[in-house]
Image (cartoon, rainbow, N blue to C red; front, side, top):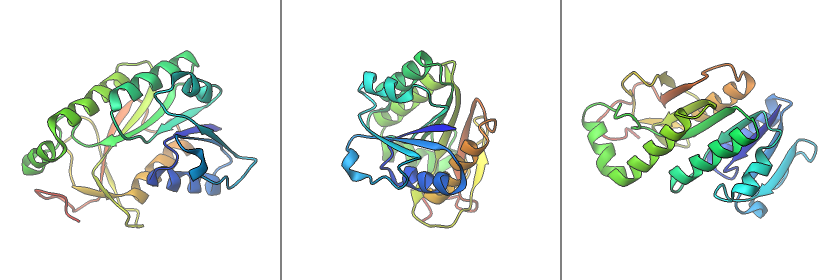
Length: 210
């Protein structure tokens, strides 16, 4: 399997990379804006590409011949989603894992949902929602992962909610998000055409329960 990691220097992406190298035979293409920040661990299984997801020609070239694209990005999301969908469609690459934050569908109940909207800001939330909508309305086989507030606890402990269910907790470890991504990479038929909320059980509250 050929897997493209967009935003390969990110904390979750690096956890995913380590586990995919250890637990699979996949070839990884590591896409990031400053390639010097990464050192190749396995020259036979890793390729580094320096590029910005906003650079369409570089992105499309990187997507060619991939089996799965995992995107873990920051910044203004809508133009990134546009380019990802366009390039994957052009190259006939279908499987996408896209990590974003919670609140895409106003699915976060109660005071925490209200706090989230105020804390993140309406414009940022709307940009995130537009990006997700672009992916959901495409022909891609996507899994959108809507993560609670993240921490670096190495413990893997999480629960999932579907698009139609209220979001539950307030925090989740990056190790837990990475675990879900690795499982989907190992079995891409899991969670097809879905949007999953991920949180740590028992962390409900009005604000993130660190």
